[in-house]
Image 1 (cartoon, rainbow, N blue to C red):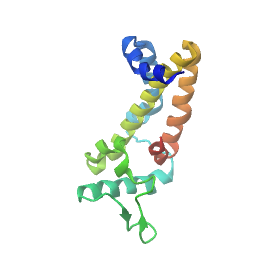
Image 2 (image 1 turned 90 degrees about the vertical axis):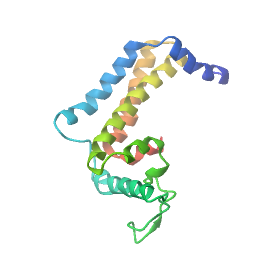
Image 3 (image 1 turned 90 degrees about the horizontal axis):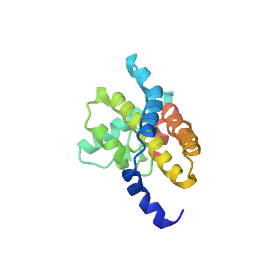
Image 4 (image 1 turned 30 degrees about the horizontal axis):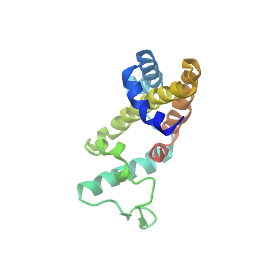
Length: 165
């Protein structure tokens, strides 16, 4: 694929949207993330999420509220340089809306964020791969693998991996 074709891709997606693929990838993301919400649960796939990621997110939110950037975290190992950490959510634009939520709603907001990211990953991977391979069936299979095999896997196991994308 040429560089020129890559810049035309978003325009082509808007010109001829594939609504069935959009709904398909939304449905697959919902299959993974909606059942826990219906049962009144949130997605916490490991103790790392609960005992490291969640407190670090709260620290990042508190630092922003105080006007800081979270460059130093005094709560980890007696104080560490937090600027280069993947757990510093201040630098992740996808986390910024979560900072506006009350603390008790963070898990629900993060759950919704992961659902949206997983859906969009599948949908845009499909659009790219359909253009690249020229085959809807191959693009569908490859995009489904990307959707559920990467983002969904990391979201269920370790939240911090999502900030690496």
